[in-house]
Image 1 (cartoon, rainbow, N blue to C red):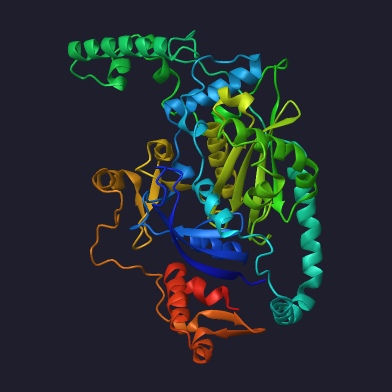
Image 2 (image 1 turned 120 degrees about the horizontal axis):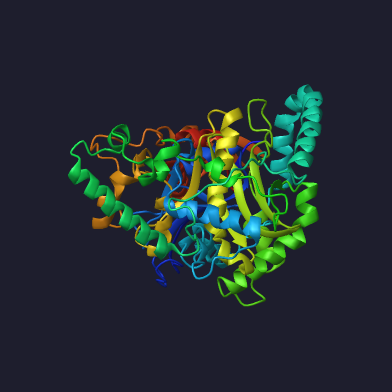
Length: 514
């Protein structure tokens, strides 16, 4: 099935959830009846993002809080000290049931909207876009079906095999087995018996160690860690360096083995949300109840706001077509819920899209009773590890997209802590390492990150007449369609759409015109 979209144009002057401006937000949007995963990959690489079936792109030089697409590079990712603290807190809780007091509010990811999609949900409600809004007419379905009929006849046998295969994978993924085999060994912090729940003590210890190191360096001009050990200094001065210079991998920290008598059991299950798998349907009500509590407690929604229909439109409906290419990940491409099961109940759900080059994080909701586990950070680290796991089989799937980075909103800056990461240049659509972007963002909310003044958007719309239009039961190039159009605003709208989606998507996707 081809991607079919209905362009809605520019919406400016609506409420911004980041700076609370009443009418500062501006974005262009379209309703996606269906999207291939490659088309959506290309769209997010041009600054688009989906919320349910609504796909939108902030007008960067106009909106009050510019939203820059951010991606992390999981293959080079190294967890920071605060990330390790969250992972160790989880292990401690699972092993002994211990709850670290007093630091559950220290992770911004746990105290704010995880993603830009929530801010735009108000707009979707305002537009009153529903799943059946101008649904694909029978004509459109009929026309597409006729086009696909021959292909379908040829590949029917292959397809039935594929769907059986995908169902088996779904059963396996939903069986409650962890996505990795769980291996563990105990990690000791420098200072061995350090109480991980009391960071200030650890910091004091580190300061004392640093002083000792500086003193030794003054005494010994060679002054390097290796130099000390080579010259017979007692290795106990450098416990972290004594074992190995290799830092622990993210997987080592996540999948540490737990004792036989561990207090709790955590399982992560990946279930396809669109089209809904049997596991997704079986757990829908439980998952929705977690979402409802999350919205009411964390985002202070009144009880009647997080309805089943809002939950479905926002986090379950997806325009992405499920695809199972032989060289793709076992679970296939498309939209999924990553469910976190603690002792047999769902405590958190990460909504993700698996695309040809990335895992794209859509949203996270969790049971507020477990806020102390910093589940926002924990789930992001699990999603980075999941991307690394998928990359082992599908080599080009090597990025983790975290949605939008909003430098002008302090609560949304946490995404920059997952390094190395890149921001998308809003003019040339090339990726620039975040370190190179931050100085510019300190000076101006809106920035072109590409420093080459000659550089242009290579994927821009160069031949709008080749854009594909679906009109009155027929698929035709825009060059043919425009001959029958007399309304000048029609051309302006189509050309704006072409410039925003780029030439490749404009030629592949069908732009529905009534």
